[in-house]
Length: 360
Image (cartoon, rainbow, N blue to C red):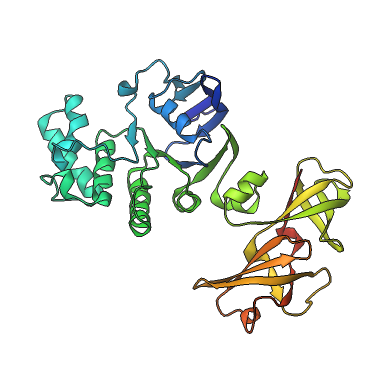
């Protein structure tokens, strides 16, 4: 059996009585771009720091090529690291910053010069060798930090919220650069962020962290279409939730009564559904149809609360008779938007195969 390139095995990390990471286990393939996604305090950075050797896990193991890293000091793990703060040496030029890890490793002068030239070209900063960090923009400084981390050809590159200090436009530009660099180098990247859009844009797979554990691992499409928990459903993409009660059960599917008289049939259910038990039915705003007249059996009457034009789509906020909010996203030019007014009655419906229910 092939040994995974990088293995995280039952990592546990505590700070006094606080449990930051609980038995996190994950296999990472060589050349994979995997993102640790989650809110502040969910354990994603603590897991990354254990990989880097900046923090010692309370228990568990981390293996590279089948060999533990835990008995190797951080400065000897040969792992690249890029932080939110650029951590450039302000008294050194761009070229000297990039050359620093190579000089520490006592590489030949000719090799250092060629490597600095090569990695600055990779991050599109050719000709900046003599520039001082203080004379550069935030985006340029982050590219220098990335070049420095790549200079010694690390097998793994760790990135901890590296773009969170940049504005939206610049952040998206650097994201495209990171994707290009990943394709060109094939380096294995582990990336930490709390930004779901960033995770979806960059990653081969995403590990969603919550309260120190990984709730689910998958591609962006898998997490969006088939969330394994309500937390993942709420964290990946926009979602609506309606309270419901189980009317009938067929394996892992159930008929669910919502808003009094509307029954949604054959909805996939996560958890252990019981007849008469309460569930939350999740719908994605773009999967909901809206009409100014009842459009089908099972349509749910709502009141339009707000209408917001967002360019390529219109966001319509509605409210059910039980005072539950339901967001509907309609594409630009959709006929249902015509003459729609706040306060008016409308009806929403959806394909039950696009719904998901969670117990509890």
